[in-house]
Length: 295
Length: 273
Image (cartoon, rainbow over all chains, first blue to last red; front, side):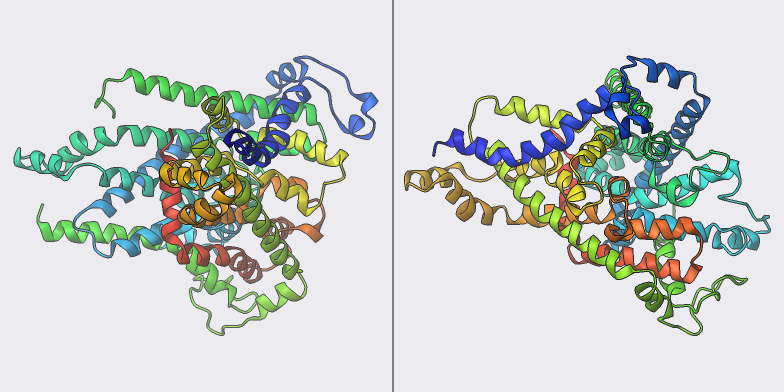
């Protein structure tokens, strides 16, 4: 057997799986988004009609879609910076020469990442219960009135954001910690000899050298956070008053509760395009900045 | 700043962070042992005064958690084994076997990473509906049988294998399959462990696709069973916490046992290119 034939033989199972169960469905979604596939088409394919850009046009005129897009942007715009700040803070603490029991702290801080989002979202619901939850109990000790965390349209999304930060910051913490450890010690020594304070060492040594890692981590987190779904599904069911309905939540409802698969496919594609545009813009902006000019 | 003060500050902040990270987990565990109805009190109790296993008994007896647990184990186990086979073969081929268009094909695969998985879910559901695979184990396992990230990880690792070793085996007349099984696989052991734990945890925690695909409770995984209980609002806090413990504990223990492999994989996956 030649190496070339062996190569294709080895590649076939994986390519077949990725082709049949990913690539073809993605192309299928594009086709589906140009049709009015709904409950009637599900019953009998003869009811299927081609509507060209009709679904996309309808989405542009649908307040519920704009609202879902807005909620998703809110989650990304607030959640990503908070997550990155928590990750960077934790990584700096773990990297500090003053820290003790590093292995224990690293494991403890990382633990939320491996937990099941659905199960911890259930726990979160009870911790942020208005009457018996620990969140309000602690606020009460400080003399602050109880907050209706998941029942108040203003507070539901912030509560989900808090959950997402708690659940995810450990992931980027590990990557940033590895980035910090890769910075040569001599650079800090040189800065110290020049009399640089801890803050200036961070600002002028750590941060610029960590720049590329931070950018990559930010892009991955942004695309992850655009895919908000399980948290509102379990914690709020998209409410109250649709205030936590994300684009994917809307897609799930349109597609699998109302069986409007044409519209739902268009929603999935718009989300994809938005994610692509935002991450591409982040890459563009960062490449334009001179090296070391971040922050 | 005074060095002793700085040391206290750094370690104090770490301790506070660890407390915040672990509190929800500890609270969940404590409440799962409280008798029904006793956790809803003021101030909220932290420790079960009269610990009981009733909540777990209830879950296994009435709520059918056995079924969900077995389904989760079966689905995650099958995805892990099958995707290991596909990803190892493909990753090795991309790293060490020469063929026309190799780099271009690999770049194409990496390009797929840009597309969020949810885009494929609607047509995939229709595809499975017309082939009768909706609400079946196969419907969850099949799409997870190969991943771009898995192929990428294997390729990264396999590129470090010495070419002389493979050439020597070829000159000795060993077939490519034999070389893969007898020489390459043993050398790939570290990346196999990493990929196995990464895949198992991802499959265990996966939610959206199983939710769409598994329409009947008979095939529910633990996250699906737990989410449906949570949305019914009929079970008490203590029983829900027992269900959460049951869902989280297996992956948490697995992670603690194989922490190094998991973190290796996380770091390898993040160094793209």
